[in-house]
Image (cartoon, rainbow, N blue to C red; front, side, top):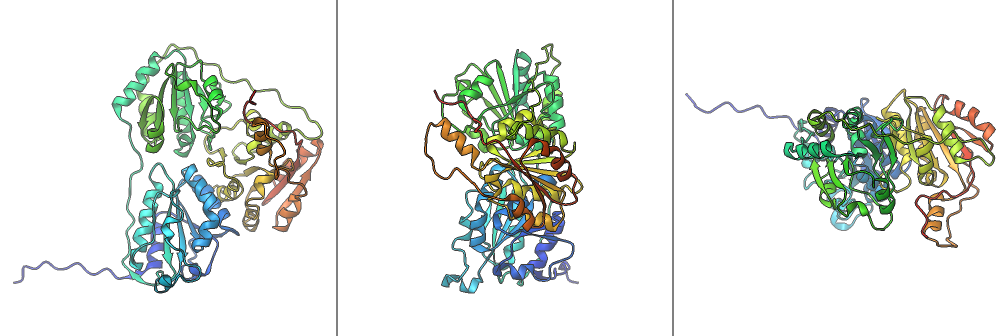
Length: 542
């Protein structure tokens, strides 16, 4: 009688393509964003009915749509680009996804393995190096049968905090090759804080007379805004927003909300001067945009940081950092915080409603838009010269209410609004965008129109690059070319791509245009001609 154990039945081989689609289904990925090319045709052939292929007309828009969709659904966006040329077109928004900490699995076609040594047309030399350092993981698998495992790893890495894009280059002839199926695994994503470090933070909060909490985008990304509010109320601390926060992590109408921190070292330090303790939650310490001395780092203010990003902790110049994801950290903080006899801090005082005038003031537009938007609408913004005005007249409600680019690179928010509208069906998405910003990815309107998405695009047209006008004044430089943008007709552009569009030139026209644009079936674009006066983003140098 043989003692040999019966062997397990062999697992039947499948194609690389079939194994990949099985993984996507297991990961809950229901849409693939792409712009097709010849090196992707074998992947795209006989497309399955249960996975939606979202066509974008340019690769930067494709990545922006996937980024918005991933943020709306809190699952990785899956992108398919065309070889090295498509990756090159997409790099600006890949960089933005990196700064946004958005989970993306980006794939790109590659020429057939047999002709790669000949430097074939449309081949990508050292393909995995091209998108670095703005992807967390990048590979061109050594063998065709390794492609599904590489995609699985790319997904796990993309979804691990701090989230971010990953990249897999796939030769054209790999998709039909045999491989073994790859089983999807569960990988936990929450990281608990060090209890001793948390107790030190709680001790500092208990002893503080005037604490401040500085909240950043990681709180909203984690779906932890309500928890953040509960912590702030128990701590009786003033709440500020970190510089350039790309999400709304605290309700801006809350009585403890103090305001927005500047990206200027001096202005930020002045804003926090009265606080003896600053706790930064879900943000770097701090993101600056202009140079200067930051007195907050001189030692008079105690600083703590809670972050899910070890790199952000490593570059923090002062204070103690606690590495943890937001929900476990805030839950522990809430449990450990004692009741305090501190008086509740007073929040900011909003300015009065602006008056109508002609030419149309931006503050009047933003206040009217804020009043007209549905309560559950999501605002996607890319009007950097008007952001300080927006922060005064458009208070955001908190969780999932506000999105923008963390990179400062234009061309993100219009396609991201398309992705967010796809990810939040039945909810109105509003894209507030400058005329200069809109032209970077205007073709994203076509995808939205084809799908009749509930999207309203408000173009603030001041006939130029307003942010650059502002900086030229702050830096006291003159005669800068390329800042004016006359003659762009956004109504015709939008109508040419299938959208309803209207132009507003007077204050009296605004209410009616907003009412229709925010309720129309499908995509509506409102071009608003505003006063071209230049707002100052930072204090002007003396």
